[in-house]
Length: 458
Image (cartoon, rainbow, N blue to C red; front, side, top):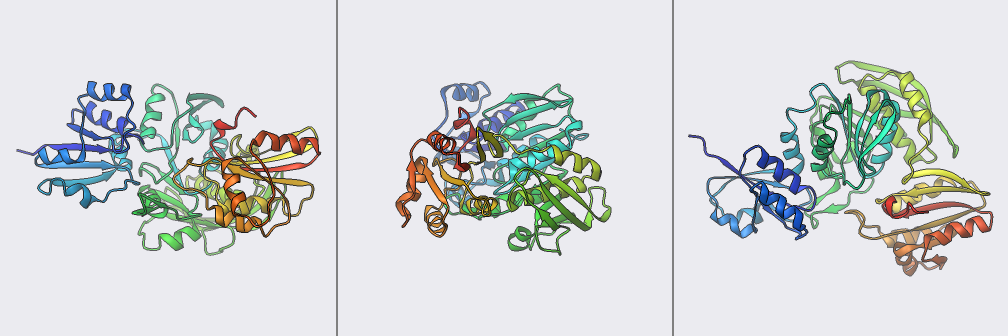
């Protein structure tokens, strides 16, 4: 007789409740450990209704036989620290990502699937792909919500939904009964491995997670469980040179050994024209193709161009026609709540609002306007937005080297100000920055580390 396996779902803050309930619906025995003590009363009731028992780690000493531990990739505990509570159990450890993949093994056989992860550029890449593949009625999970497009018309299925693996399942459930031929899922710390193509935009900074027990590159390595992987070449070479995968395509701004690279670029704030070359890349069908073509899109900085390259290579990997790629990218005008350009009275406002703004992103954003005059540069934001906090010392050292008109704002701006030798203007309320620029007929580069929902009243 086969011994039954008991599940222990750890972390009920980042999607564990959904995973536990879905396992219980399948008739499996499920325990759950609320490691961060964030469980709400209604969630406790829901778990109780599905006979999911809440326990502490020490309680596993009462269990017998097999235990499958389902944990988030950023769990600040090692496997050994869990096992010590009952060394006699036969353990299996899988991440939340892998658990969701198992839950979805019967889903989406006739649906094109793209998973996107990386340190920067994930959301922008999602919406560039949306513009190109809008005719497939895409279902999307991104940091801007769970969204379904039907004949080009947007339906917001859920606004405040995080990009955890469990919310991929949630998004699919929300879209039950809807007719979509494409699913695009953004994920912050890896991928479930359900993608026909997985896009890894970059490892711009390899920040630590899980109390320094893991890092971004290790977490995002799960993207290589997808059928075909598109990856920035510099990140591929630095962090994943030991990966063995039959279908990997790489892209680069300047490395001509990549499968797709940038031949030439002509920047402007409204549209950037990019001359692209691709060679010996492999498609999902297993074909090897080469060629070149030009695209234009909203990509005012090199980091935006890199996002375009990743999206183009993803589409080529999916055998998407070049004309369709060109047409879709022309329609992309940036994202409200990420990078976008607008005019208020006589002032051009370029917004770079992102929960993951870091030193490198700030440098790249300032480079967009380095040859332009009459600009204020405003930098600031909030703390506690993502796993990765901003390195204020690095930012302050960089800002001390430039001569632009700088304004610091918000809690992050105040932290940077304390560490700078030069003391620029500080304005606590970011709205006053806009007002000052408009009053003085100045243009504004507004770089702010935040969730856009907190700034959307502007």
